[in-house]
Image (cartoon, rainbow, N blue to C red; front, top):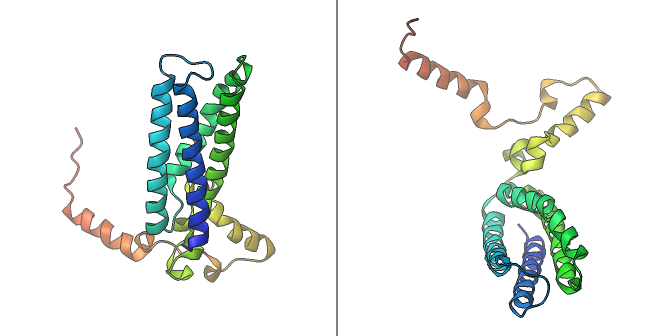
Length: 193
């Protein structure tokens, strides 16, 4: 992956960690409305953001697929933070904390987008050697978005076998036939009860 995209990701994650550090600092100095677990939650959020920074760097350097764990983490924390942010804005005298939480929420949305970008274009591997489904992150694999170009082409003309996208080597008929035959020969006959 080129340094530019990785740099943007690392800068965004650094800002995200700095926001959590600022929130923790303000809570420890008594700003905002706090409960018994506020400082503990702030420490966990800061540690988590640092771990995400390290994991993101690791994933960007070693995989052509967007980081699934980070995509899932950011998606669920975006959904679960909505009530928290709403509640913080409702509380009186909590504007600084509410503002920082809102900025951290926006950073999560940006990070979800950045972590969902396809990285295979920036890989040292040739595009032909990477199957389309291997290029997708969690959302692309869930919604089968790698099939969209084939659907569009099929809408415009009749598809042939040459128009079909490349599949993973482990899913090719020859490979699966050998595996099936091996298991078939090693299997025991089923005796009904």
